[in-house]
Length: 254
Length: 254
DNA sequence: CGTCGATATTCCATATCGGAAACAACGATG
DNA sequence: CATCGTTGTTTCCGATATGGAATATCGACG
Image (cartoon, rainbow over all chains, first blue to last red; front, side):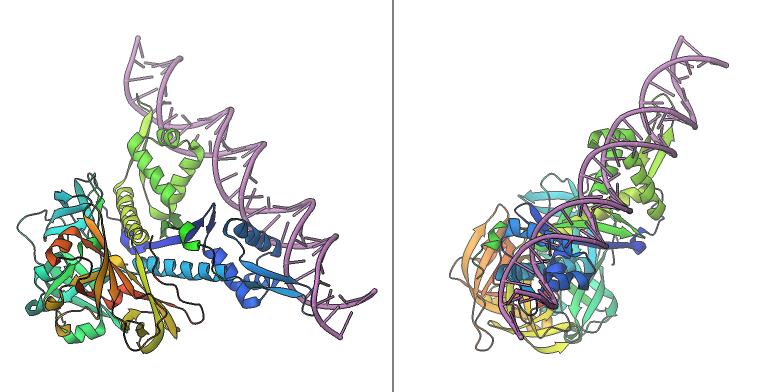
């Protein structure tokens, strides 16, 4: 089953927005404020964005009703006037950028999924028995079986001889494996790691983990296919989702 | 100037969706498929969601045109027929859940922002001079000055005596500091860390870093206010956003 | 005091969304 | 074998939101 290559054609995306007292500030609002800042006027912004002036102006008013002054408007003068952003508007832009940057990271990064039953639980922290051993992850309280998602930028690699002692770090998950492939970018390298299977747990998952590391790390650690490596993941960066009846899905590259 | 308590009333949010060959599968689509699964029929789902049948059915058709068969339909019979989800639809639901879980993680986690000029660059990897020393982060290529955001779930803590050698791990950023506060949840603990200031860099930032760790780690490492600690962050988990002219914003709890 | 460029406002065309109603399919039932 | 009940399918119409053309208003500058 699942003969359709859904993974291939599917594209993760998102619409971030900030909700402030009734209004939602989304991408187009931010784009609009930026254009106003650049052009120095509402009408100029409308031209630049090829939007109608009335709508744009109304949108500014609507935003200001909930948020407060965003655009300082001036009328008259040799140049007819103009507008500039208030400090509040600038802060809004910064906030939005940070939000996007954070989400963007999620969308651009590979994820590995390991699934299995919850064998122990302490509040929102669950111990999950997977094909590669026990994994500690944040998971919803009502899940008996979860799929644990691990972002590749949360995976750290260590030389087998240099693995920090468990007592000395806050990193709770540790996996031994062998590097199976490298995908080298300009400064960042994706590393495919074939994990050692554990005796317990289901065998359903492809035991592959993807790590995102710097090229510098690749050189320092001497990473290359066939090499043994230890991967570690913070429990708080491993997120489980309830999966009581749905079947497992394995590694997902995007 | 910036007198408005924007942070207080602002709420991060997002609309995740999957783009598949022209159509976008969003929350309501997923909700619809779930309802069809639960009710065993399109009409039942329409009732349950209090949506009109025609729209719901048309939406199913529209999705299927781009994605492929999602709903197996049967007409006639004692019970008049019914519908069930295909394997493709089930996979879609799992995919969406994972996407939401990943984004959800971003929204729920604290972020620390450190800003400063880019002093070195290798592709998308930049070295940023901050008030607490040089930070290696992923940053847009055209930024001369960036704000680096660090998610609290990407921060690992180590006892000062157990810090792994730089040659042995892929973790490139390291900060020494003192624990200033602990916020203990049921299983997860937020740790506030006052970082040691560096001689270089701007002094604009509040040099505080927030880490999210398990309670177990708190016990094992003996974390408590006043204690010296070493925090480490993978370069690939530190994301910079361009900030050439906008002013810095410091720590942001949500 | 007229001018000019920008801000505010009014009003209308259009696309989109949502729902009511009629229609078709199909197996069980008598 | 006609009837019935439930569900899937289609058609059509009204409400709502969206976008834009035209117009009125403002105010420092020369």
